[in-house]
Length: 215
Picture 1 (spheres, rainbow, N blue to C red):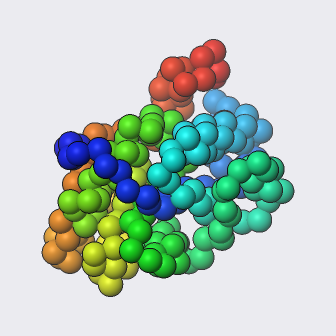
Picture 2 (tube, rainbow, N blue to C red; picture 1 turned 120 degrees about the vertical axis):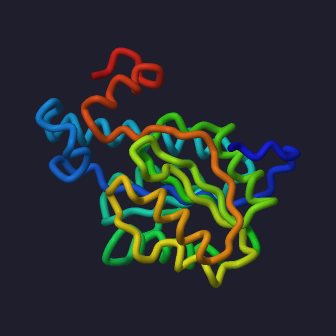
């Protein structure tokens, strides 16, 4: 459920995880409905939409965490306060744990999202930030059994690595296993409404309200 506490949102770091828009390496499950080039263009539009949403939040210090070098990152930084960082780790869990550890340099909370969910809006991110005032962790469940958002207060930072350990990433077990890790670490968490990522051809219909007439 969304935490409906007072809207005194505090400054938090907002980490966006994404990949370079290389044809054949992003949105591959959209093929053959979309070509590799169209899939890469879709990925670009989703990233741009995500960063536009995030950059409008005055309380968020925005960081882009990328999987590899690409000229596009410099273009995205133009005229903005966006900082770009490189993901490190053998799997998604290790990369997220590394980003959380690197970003947790003071008592400021942090929220981590991917770039594949255009339904993440300012109100959704504000609700996540507000939830961290009363909880150790906040989750934004995904319709496919994963999550579109995870956020941490800094009250128990020594336990956060364990939240990512032993999770079967890219399966419908991610959310259930993450809840288990939170229970094991005795962390209190809040959950936001379920949203959908844009990963499969059947997800394209969800784009129409954000990108009318596309696909």
